[in-house]
Length: 317
Ligand code: SF4
Image 1: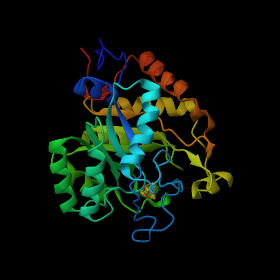
Image 2: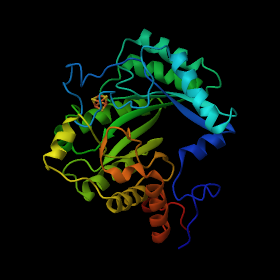
Image 3: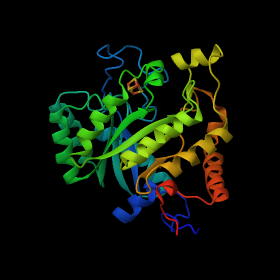
Image 4: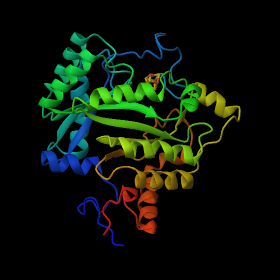
């Protein structure tokens, strides 16, 4: 059986979002993380307190700017750094990352998203949120936006298993996720789903079941993260008490390859590992060597002679 690469230009065996963006917009498009000063219903007591057990004090937005500054100021600050790194021939996608970025009245969302979209050379918008925090009114507005720009709404699923969700204090069930997901999908809004490998007590079979479900749902994009154990979190306390073990790099690489085989070939891959805050990361320390993780995934996919979506019959002849 022969293999056809998803995009021969990248030589990767998965469907990279960065390559898709380059093709769609004609040049490199990069995200700019912003902090709109939102909170989260899992922190302010509406759904829960303390947040998900791995959530950092910055609400999982470790690379977002300071909410004390305006959106356009934050945008400019990051843009200058990106220009120093890659030159100025870039497009930008403002990314509301920290906390729950639809958790506010609609007029505030309109103001913040509007300010971001008005920034220089912007070709899209990414909004990270919880599936239980999207009202019909907000979904209608997001549908309107997605007709005007390349909008992606990012939903934190992490796992389909409600037992793990309760353990990590996610405060929403898989059915809640499906309700939120379908509200967006039926309006034609691109959804990117986040999942985490290495959650306490999850077996490889459980992680693969999560990927299989995403293979069935066929979201626009997926981000696969490794569980980062960050200082001053409930998760760190559990880890230090020896209640669960960190995932090894070998196990992570094999699990990700198994998951890529289960995802739909058209789903874009935005990430195959996370960028934890180096200062506060307790474990797994091997995750700092991102290059080795990504090279390991490429090597394992080549060894298997497989591609993303091969269990859906993709790219094989
Ligand atoms: S939903 Fe996101 S922001 Fe809210 S507590 Fe969980 S990880 Fe943190």
